[in-house]
Image (cartoon, rainbow, N blue to C red; front, side):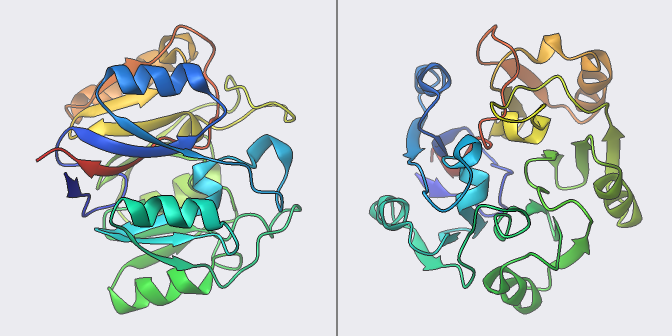
Length: 249
């Protein structure tokens, strides 16, 4: 297996992914696609609905480098067992927003979309060192709110993310909010209900066909040669993202 160089954007079929351990139906669907799933266990520091969400508890920097929320010893050890060089965040996550979103940033090629005021300093320093542009947005749940389709394309419900991405010449499809389940909240985010599992394969936790903007989403992705796949026929569910980490080969 090979580490993924550009976070969220595998160049081959995914062999290892991280996601919440509380959605066995989605995990089993990924396993049927020959993907090893690293299940994320609950973090007691943040809210119950998102306490197992991978996009809240870790941030892939690229290759074998990954940031883990301070104190999450199980997740850190599990990643290290798979060859990753891990570093704890400087921030200690807390239950209330924006103290819970220090790692919730959307890496899109050479850009990082995040609420810079809430972003962990480990990620900030990495971006400065590696010439990755930080596109600051009002939305702290930037990774949850971003469907990363390619190094130059994103789908989002959030106006501030759409504006930041467009300002960096990233193609944007703006969709209507809602239509994604997240227990404890009015709704979740589509970015938290998906992940790339191959160079041209974008999978969803639930049925993407059920989304009212499905035709727009399908057309946008088709223009980028990206195929959509629903892992189940259930309603779309924000599972904290399906984070690709390694590919075959």
